[in-house]
Image 1 (tube, rainbow, N blue to C red):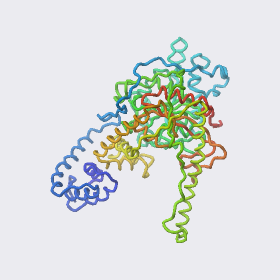
Image 2 (cartoon, helix red, strand yellow):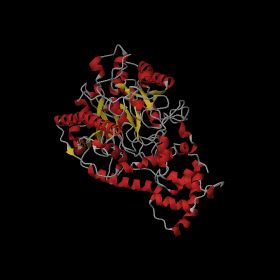
Image 3 (tube, rainbow, N blue to C red):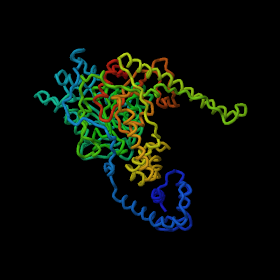
Image 4 (cartoon, rainbow, N blue to C red):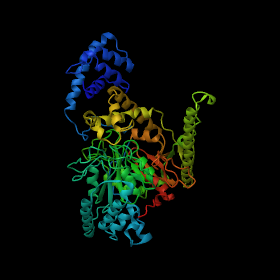
Length: 623
């Protein structure tokens, strides 16, 4: 019997542990199955599986199960024959809106702030002087025809080419398309047809967004030449806003981490470190001043992590605010698309252009995003995750398996190395803690009275297993065909092993996780009912919680580690390992909002950003 067929049987049995394959594979190879043309589920297999699964099935009931289980396997084979593409969503649609939740439905014109670029500096003599300008300021330079979209596009294309060899953030250049759109933008503006603050601005797309005429690789080996006939909705909307797509930027293979089929995308602040993932290219290119803004995606940290690593301002919108039509699906109930920019208001301008229903992604609500730069943030109610800010990471030294005097030299060496790693972790965590403390002090100085908020207690990590089940379904045929061997990562934590393992998650348990998710959503709605925005450490439980409940998050730079910071750990190749980048690298702060409450969330976060200057610092890349 084929191994692939064997896994189908395991799935049909609804087995929930990676321990099962070894036992059942041996059973499947038993003498009674030798030479059989069709795999056969036997009473013995059910008995053994029941023991391993911890499910009591009386002997008299096992006989009744045989026919059902055999029919299940046949049913699965019929579904496999449909060869469903990644773009086909399940009939079940996740809705994060708890009872009592309300949101704006009437759309009003965007109200942006006065631009500062021209008043501060005048028309730039060297166009690269504006490479790190905010999208708001760049848009004003183009609107007033102080610079042209064509010239700005050429400048950013040149920088993309120049720094790609160092940072590896481009998968595909869209130069022909970009030049045509920039020329069109200049012509429209010249004749008085101004589309808005993104008109003429070059941007970069995470390469899970379909763009007709160009490959959409999903960053994965085996998909390098994949093409789609239609642009993603977000691409269409940015075209309609007059923005200019300059490049398709890197993502870790199938939206995991920062390693794609061509390279590892790097952090502009320290190229010895990866840019984190999976929106690796959008964050790296934006931070390096190579696009005006970019679009990333998040399922569980893929905007938050690279925005933190690269010192960007990233927005993960409410689930169901931005259509995902034309984007790779990883988890239909958790995927979100959002902007990665240099400032909070840039995120607001981009969200204004890309949010709202498209009649294709049925998860999108008829919610309106109404950005008003003049909104009085002082009237907003602000909470903070008090316990998370106060939590200290001070692991105690590990004790050996026996008294130190009885340890062998090798055991002593391993224990010392483990304790050294724990001490390094403690020192880094304590150093970074100062940035969170400084943020709270700054908010107090701004006159903000923070209300302590506690997130409800649930087994969130266990609930998030549903992501694994959905991702395995999204790439089911990749696993069954064996084409997952083409992916770059093949280790225990990489997608191939994750997808295979997830096939053993029972359907009943997937439903139970979703039921637990409903309880968590209701509890979360009650816990944060009295506030408009919540201040949170980025690296805390809130990341998993809010991705499951669908709440929006705004991640912005919150300082830079000084020369006194503990050094980063490097491997034998001189590359930084782990999340800690060492001296000179950025840290971040996260602001959370109510469902579809981005207008208030961004207004408050913008006030904090304006009260600091962290968004004004940029990496020094040289020529």
